[in-house]
Amino acid sequence: MRIKAKGTHRIAGASLFATLGLVAAACGSSSSSSSSSTTAAPAVTSTTQAAVSPATINVGVLPIADVAPLYLGIKEGFFAKQKLTVVPHALQGGAAVASAVVGGSLQFGFGATANLILAVSQKLPLQFVASGDSAAATASAAWSAIQVSANSGITTIADLAGKTIAANATQGENELALDSILLKNGVNPKSVHVIAMPFPNMPSALSSGQVQAVTEVEPFVSAINAHGGKTLSPLFEGMQPSLLVAGYFATTAEISSNPGLVKRFVTAMNESLDYASQNPDAVRQIIPTYTTIPAAVASKLKLPVWNSTLNTSGIQGQETLMKQLGWMTSDIPVSQLVWSGATQ
Image (tube, rainbow, N blue to C red; front, side, top):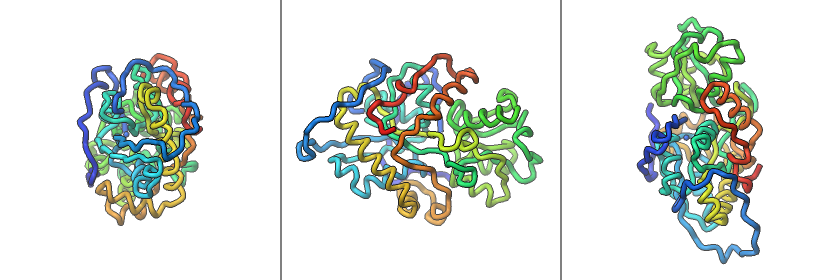
């Protein structure tokens, strides 16, 4: 089953990440790349809602369940309440989203935490402005997993040494979580071979023996288990429960030049995130409207965790691990990665 977007606009991502040597992950009208410094929160003014000008904003997303709150917010009128018309642009990777945001064709984008850290380390002027989704708080509620086939002979994480493992991208959030779990189990991450593969292709690659393990997310975790696969460990949850997996970001130039617009987006996005958390049935109903995940599958899959709190507790740990693995060398404070006006 290949997941594709339905009913959304598409924008061709620029090659900026490739130019800067940034390897991408798993997910502004006039944005420039002049600075990567922390952008201060806009001052609160007495401007009334009636005085706020209507605006259309372009948001880069991935065609996955993780971005359901954005679509729910559109449907429920949370963005309209802020006089915002949201146009989602479904792209196929985090690099395309970030490139389009930096290039100025999108005001906001959805992307993985590891990728934002890497982007900022490459001097791209991006900051998270709102939470995207998080790992579950417990292993039993995990919506991601390291999985193997039933007849693989692999029974522990230690058995993964020397194996070929699929991740949706190299040096992305999934590979970072995998490496974290390998290290915790005494396995050198350099002993495994990670190859990039789209999530929908992983189940068949696993069953055919092309790879010996996969780092998957729902609905494919459930699909693999239903066909005799085996979960060795939760993925994101195995790295850190409740970890910030992804968020919505903008350029520092966008934040500086349009602070009121950014604040309105964040207000509506936070309301959407909380609504999604409190209304899982509504989430399951909207997922098939912008992806090709069937309604029957959406009705059963384990959902990502959403809330309006932008949990920064695990960001520094991810950066530390990325430096340990040699993905980056510079130190980047959390304050540079997260806009000071974001709800935390």
